[in-house]
Length: 282
Image: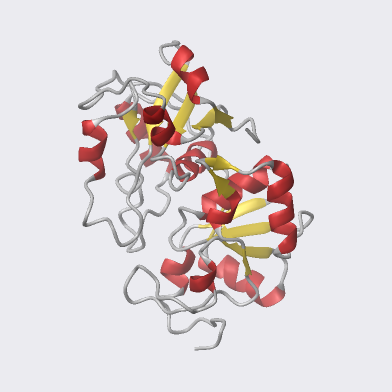
């Protein structure tokens, strides 16, 4: 295991009922599959014992037309309290086992001030492979204490990214697959152009992941270096809608890189606009 941000399934199985442990199910459907899958129903069919469902879409800012944008800190705190999630506990997040959505939940919780957040290595898939116990139905917990401490610098807006793209004062790292980045494949969301933000570097999130956790630190460092990313300059992570960009944030944080932020609107915002530059030129 390459980082202290992960816990192993056998360790969690031993500590699952510890008073200071709280488990969060952060499964979500990939773009284009939202109408095909009911993630809450899948959660109810089987989840880790005591796990609370962390619905990334439901927890988003619904005043924005963009998908799963970060909510206001106060709204997030209320939702966490009502869910029974405590900011003082060791929160352990998991997804299906592909490391697709757990990093987004990890990033959200850390951005809102939770100090102790880990990801279950291998997620639900490994847990089931080891034939560890599952629970069905909803988990109802008493209201908890959740104190928010939010640093707005972790999120970048379109105007920030446009300036960086023009002036080169930071690196934009796009986590989408290479075919989408290079305008060789359509976006899964309708109405978006092909291509990428001018000056962006491509580090596909799937290249950073192996068996539901990050690759080794040596492998991560080699991947970023090969793609032209400098660890000495600020990084803005981007992707399709701000979810897999969190995998880039997780990997860079694991490598001890500071100054990493996330463009929350990502390509869902940039690729929908007619007034923004795109590479390759449209």
